[in-house]
Image (cartoon, rainbow, N blue to C red):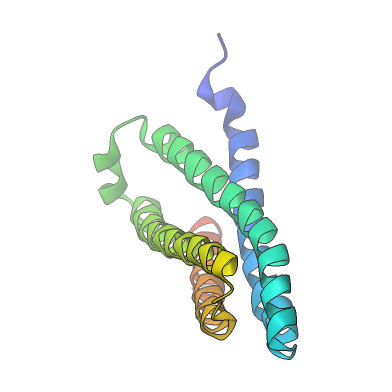
Amino acid sequence: MPQLEEFYPYIRALHVLAAALWLGEAIIVNFAIYPALRRNHKEVKRLHVLAIYRRLFNMTTMSVVITLLTGVALVIYYTKGNLLLLQGSSLGRTLIITSVIGFLLLILHVFEKRSIIKLKKEHRTKEVDTEKFLIGLKWISRITVLGLTMVFLIMLNAVNPII
């Protein structure tokens, strides 16, 4: 039976790839989609938001889930199942800090999902406040970019100390 050690490089690569996709999606929303949408007419905005953002959000959700699951697997591997070991090393404390940031971004993602569901319901009644949604989208994507960039920099520094 294969041991977790055999899968570690693949799990870690998948974790980094999924997190990079999540960051990339947030960057695309922040610097491409949001600026393009806010310049359009109200009806065009509404149609584009519903068409583009729903699909992009589903991709982001997959990235978030993969990042979360592989992150849990990596922590279990690193601690051999004893989470108290995280307190005893600087890498362990770094994992705690980055996990908390990731969890907070996950909560933000759930709130984002709720706003999309609300937007879809409003779309059926034609009472869509696209401007309000786009303002929320702007701030959520900026917070996500900042948070994920911090996680990447913290983890890079933990693996190969610069600071």
